[in-house]
Length: 256
Image 1 (tube, rainbow, N blue to C red):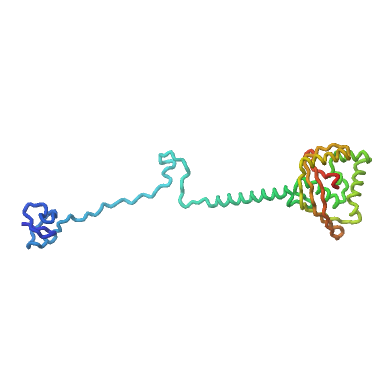
Image 2: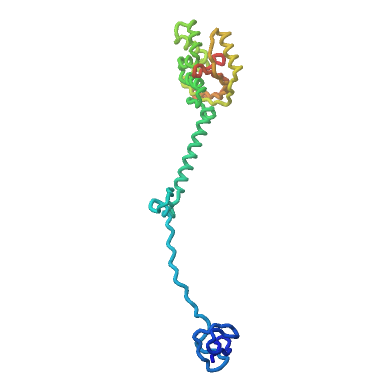
């Protein structure tokens, strides 16, 4: 007779399971005493070590590239490679472009204009007038007036030089006793004339000078002008009107 190696119960010969605890009888050996488990017999299946598992292969980020047989054609990923350098370069270029646009807008609106290098197209005749005063150049005075006005005035003068001298004597009268003159100016305010105001200007020229001017744009400008003559400095506020004819800017004769 055999005994259960787990509970020690007696087991009839030929039995495959313990009638008391149901423990399967595997290679049972007679125990010398009832109720004492036979040494070396556990009545349980011995533990089985799991089969060794292969190490997982590292993921190939480029397996979907040219040799993977896939239709994926996107850029391959390279671990550790970053695009921060390109991002910084793009940001720098964007900032420079924005600053350039702001500066252009400031110059074209006249905010940064002034001195001998006015920043806006409509300031060109003002700049010429200041240069004429500084250089005592009578011809520049003629250049700031529309050609139609110059041609009209030449009917009363022998030539353009005589006209220039006459205009210069009027404009330069306060500076004719000085040897050295420096002039700088700043546009402090500007106002664009509307269509009705431009029509009034055209009517003034037609009525007073019997000349038809095709004025397409005009500005009223307020200026702060600094004169430095022979070391003496003087400041003055001026108001001038500039007019646009055939794409060019001139001084309004009536504002001089």
